[in-house]
Length: 393
Figure 1 (tube, helix red, strand yellow):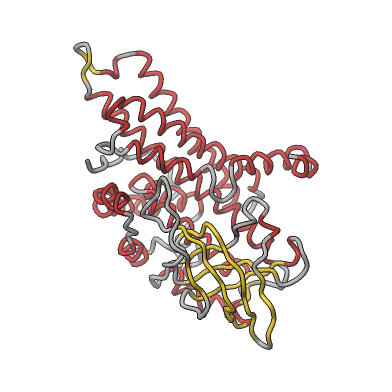
Figure 2: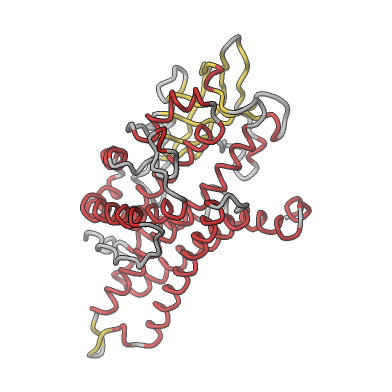
């Protein structure tokens, strides 16, 4: 059955413009995204037309500078847009987050000339991006990546394989981290690679338990030639750029997780108040009421946590610890809330007739992407106890 329209969240937004923006996103989500979500996810259909609509509506470049086609929105607002989109369909919310992640390097470390040349199409010209850091043998230990970029005159030649790439094979551009020097983090540089570059080829998409509409694939680089003018930042700066992007990207994952959790809670409440057993709604039974109350409390706590981190970011203050906390708490909350939603619906929750089983399958990946939750604990511990906690974690 179609997903229910999510209940509007009572949001604290900083401006009237932000309130209008959220209203626009809710309208698109309820009219264009949610009604097709279950069927298209089951069919493994990626909704490229939705991303075109979002681009035309100014929603793919929200946290970036309007000079280059962005929306000039603070992260506090942008993340709440992601939450609304993810509540309607995680493939869309996460896709927008990954696209923003793939724009981060150029927007924050590119030269003025690079930004003028490339950002307008990336932020508002209908292009879709992908972020290439992980490899088959370097996931959590991303600094050990093996993809190489070798200087050849005014070009770089890239060889290697990237893994677990969201939008792999359909992206119009790839932000790629490749080794240009010594082993370790200081030998990595960042490149902006066109999706149609000769020598770039995707593998078949992974067969996943959830998010079947969002292609995840290895991407092979076989002698891919990239002009030096597409190198972003200084040589050897790529890993620092990657970590900077991930701090912001983790907030995107946190917001998406709360969107999924909220959708699961909405579905559970609607079912519990309508389902009759022993002559009254099952929502009258204390055990179930307490389960719903715990779900709602953890979701509100997660929303407050990601927004607090976003406000630090918007104020130009350090936020890496809070981003890791938000990613950890919000994704664990999404997993617990979706499991509990299935339990509330009982046997119906285990069927594809209701969306909560899909939410549960989708929530799991959020505990893994952009740094597993074990890595988030290491990051938090490093901030609390110093680098030794990171080395021995």
